[in-house]
Amino acid sequence: MFYTITLNPSIDYVVHLKNFTKGITNRTVSEEYYIGGKGINISLVLKQLDVESTALGFVAGLTGDAIEEGLQRKGIHAEFIRLAEGNSRINVKIKASEESEINGQGPAVSEEAFEQLLERTDCIADGDTLVLAGAIPSTLSKDAYVRILQRIKRKQVRIVVDAARKQLIDCLKFKPFLIKPNKQELSEIFMKNMNGEQDIIECAKELKKMGAKNIIVSLGRDGAMLLSEDGAVRTIRNVSGKVISRVGAGDSLMAGFLAGYDKSGGDYDEALLLGEACGNATAFSHTLAEAPEIQRIAGILRESK
Image 1 (tube, rainbow, N blue to C red):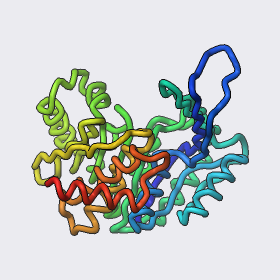
Image 2: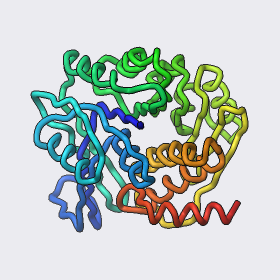
Image 3: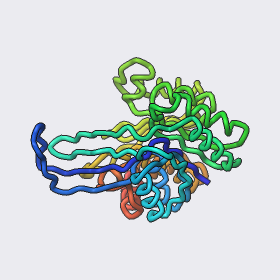
Image 4: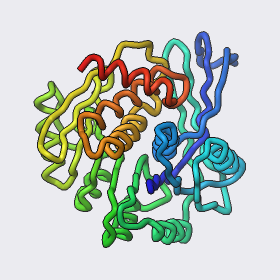
């Protein structure tokens, strides 16, 4: 079973405008609402790949109701801790001549509520996969991920972490199966510019020495690079297409890699290919990747090998 933890899920409110002008009332051309949060995104894309998961985390208020109901409609099993006060956050994505985002803070998470989440992870068993993805809310201690991993450390659980900077580094002692920094995050971790693939490879090897088994580095428009547990470096390029939104593309890459790895019996090339297909499918869509587009792009990638 896959479990995803999203400590601060959201409703993403996407507004499309011809132009955005500060200081006046702007009228939208169209708008959409999506359930957001990195772990939730991974659960949603796994569902498109016929992989079941359970979503864990915190919700609150009317927006929390909407998140739970939306996941239920999508066929995602969720076991959120419901907070007594506040509302789950709303993130505003403005799409005009340029893209801008306004991300909400979210509800306060008490220590008591976090202890409830820790207790909920006790259902995770040997052979399961746990995905920790996204930022830790400001009301929680910065070692929240470490505490979760400490709770399950005696079990044979496959750990996946997508977190920034120190939060990621702190998790490496638990030897995660997969991490996914991007070039900017590598620059921040190692305090150096990524001037080419060799710099990226060297930094990925350092992360491997620190405990990570597999490291995917998303390269944006240039595709992705994988330093796998067997020590090999693999790269894959994007397919051509019109990019509509990159929101959730990295999460889709991770979901596709995990599903591809399991479905292929541990074939890294197939895992990376399916991951890239999912990332591209999300980038070319108004929503997260859906199965028909994933299959179409995966076919193109296989033909180009």
